[in-house]
Image (tube, rainbow, N blue to C red; front, top):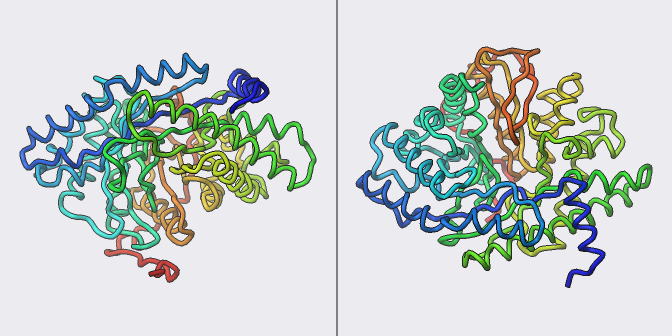
Length: 454
């Protein structure tokens, strides 16, 4: 039962502290749509998405109105398209056609984004998977709501360096084809190590093959709630600090559970997981960086930042699992530069660099996220950044990711505006020393010794 005090607390978190359900994401399996005929495949994909998600947006809006809880996005994730379309696609143009089909279906059911234009190539690439990857720049430039992701490595398989090298080129090509929108296409593209099957957050969401035919996953966000809670214990011990974060995360997860169970019941779709992620927005007071400052740092990026973020991430997870047996996805703290006012401020004053962000990814939920870099950054440099991040994920057996945006025509000192939840960002400098000889080696980096557990 939820008592009156808890209702009052929840109302305060929503009204004054930017608590929201960031997304209800319906995962849809497209495995039964596979067909060697491209026309039939596209038709099956369109029909299944529309039939499955026809009521998703309406239901989300009704739950939001009934419970007074903001639900910012309604999204869809689908089976990685490389697993569904391999028999039908003979060219990159065929995959672009599927991307357009996904986009049409997403528009028809009025969702905010659709994820799953994806390939899982952590150990090697089939010809079909390579075709999909090479189609990504054109696919993202010709669609509005489709998001793409590629899994390049895992703790069990190592890192596919051939795919890492290719993705450096894909990021640059995507940036070029969307340069009229400040290379915005790259904001819909992410690469992973140890990608989870049940992530409800874009751009990396896809519906894993271990999932049911349809599933409801919910992502909850509340950086402002945590910051407000910490303001009341200024100067207290680490024990008090940890307990405060954990208890706050528990309350936030309860809100997510309420929405997830209600959406599952109304849509007659099984409930999957609640992803409790402190996902910031550009709004004042909705910042992970501000939480770190409330812990005692002058700016995010100062010495002690990685330790503070490790504490935050761990206590968020502990609080979440107290509130729900089905916490999953990426749960923890996100550090996207363009989407976090405190991170933007720290990057602008020089407190935060890409190298410091890389260190922080060892203990955060995801990795290098929404970082704008100079448009003339070399493909091989981007591949080197990706390789570093994949290595952190592989060795530490955690999810890591890279979503960088080489903004064509802009350099260090410029600012790029993405709009909405994507915010804005200063162009951050990258290390200019060359790594092309390293990333040009063929093959894969093997899995670490601790991967052999069976």
